[in-house]
Structure formats: structure tokens, C-alpha cells
Image 1 (cartoon, rainbow, N blue to C red):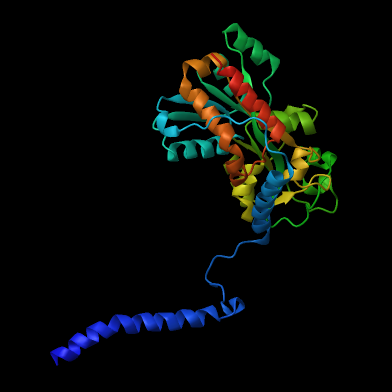
Image 2: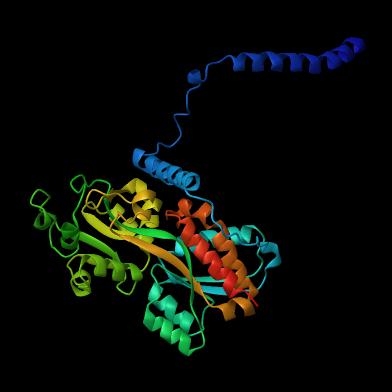
Length: 356
């Protein structure tokens, strides 16, 4: 009996291998169409699928169609960087700054980066006061801030890192607002009822959610759409302000007659529960944003100073890392890549700033 047991132990692995080979051979001949998807997987709405495809395919198209940049910075090794730095500025750009910060940490940076999500204007002011090392902004720095910085011995240097679109969002149940003109857009954020804007729309109050009045996105929207009549925007009935654009978007997601304007990134994060409204028949995407056909586009920047970058190598290193990796991260958070020429200019600015 012992001999039979011994023989069985020898043959068992051989039989197992033979059986596995037979199973694998059968699997190879099963047509792929016969393998059914797991029906328990969560269904994704066609809107969110098309959004992801649009960002991914558009970014690939950008890489394939545009020439490679002429400037290439020397790669930074985050493991070698350890001192702290402080960034403050636009809440619109915060998701992108956070994404590059996370990647910097994952690749070995051992210092501390303090990031404050406020407004472009406050970010400029703190930078000019010498409180921060980098200002993040969703607009170009105004001359008044430049003069304030120069009084304190700072020369702000712009680094273009991408483009944002301000988008109009409504609740996913809203089936009546499918396209709007600029004139209608102005009325939507000042009128009382939807029917006041268009008689074919419901006789229901317009429930508005907007970023805080001090934010750069409100400045931009008010200047572009309301001829700088900020008072009518802020004082309109049924208008709620929130400094967190994600909460602005979430508020619209639970209010059937809600509407808001936010940076595209916050729409992307909540796209399953929102509808994106085209303006004058144009939807925000890579092509319409880069060509500026979409009416509400904004450039995104980091600002720093040559003296700061030379005295604090970690600041120069982070900006280098940001410029070198931003186009890989930017579609994931819902912004649009800057053109090759804009990134080349930013990298040239970095090289000039770090020259000894």
C-alpha cells in the first residue's frame, strides 16, 4: 500500500499539469463575445464615460498633433528634496496643485508643502507680502500686484501650466436647459424665475449657487458676462455663496432647479449628477478651449521669484517637477493642457530664474 501511495504522489503533479493544459487549451478556443461582463459592476452613465473619453482622447490627440517642445528641463529627483515650501492661491487651480503635490510626495519628497486654497487675489497679496513662496492663479497678475511686489524687492515670474474653463452646470434632472446664449446666461444669474429668462422654461425659482464674491472665478464671470455688475450677481434672490467649488457643484446636484458656474474640474468630479450646459452651442473641450472658441476659458499659472527660487532650491525643484509632469496629470483632474509654446515659455522662464 505504501508503494501505491508513493506512486500516487509522483503522478499527482503530472496529472494536474495535464489537466491545466487541457483547460487552457479549451479557454483559448472560447470566442471573446461569449464571455459576459459582470452585471454586478456599477453602471456608468454615458455622460461620464464620454467625458473621460473626451479628456483622454483629446490629450492623446494633443500629443500626436502638436510638435514636441523645444525646451526640456533637467529631471528632478524628489528624493533629493527635503525642505519645506508654502503655496497659496486660487481655489480653481487647487485640484491640479494637489495632484502634483501628491505625485511629488509619492516619488520621494520628504519635506512639507503647505497648500492654501483661497483666491487668486489673496494669493497674489500673500506672495507680494513675502508670506508664501509660490502663488497659484487662474488669471494673470494685475499691475497693482506687480507694483506691490516690486516695492518689496520681488519680481513675479509667470509659469503657464494649463487652461481652465468656467462651465455652467444644472441638475441632472433638468431637461429644459440644453443650450444658452450669453444674454440668457446673464439673466439666469440675475432673474427670479426660469420662465423670466425663457417663457418655455418652468415657472420655478432659479436656485443659484456661486463661489464666494472675493474669488477670481466670480471676478472673471462678472467681468465677462455681467459687464462687471457684481452687485446684481451677489444680491440676486436665491443665491448662495460657498468658498468650496466642490460644495457648489454638490449643491446643484441635489437641487432640481439649481444652477451654478464652476471650474470644469469640479463638474468632472460630480458629472454623474450634473448636466453641462453648452454656451452658444459650444461645449468646453480641449479643442474649443485651446482655440478659445468656448467663451469662458482662463489661463492657469504659478508665480514665483528668481531670488526665492535660488535661495530655496526646493521651490525651484517643485516648479521644475510641476512643469515636467503637468501634462500627464492635468486631464485626470479636469483641466486642459497648455500649448507646447506656452510650456516652452514657462520652462525658459524657469531656466532664466535659476541662472546664477
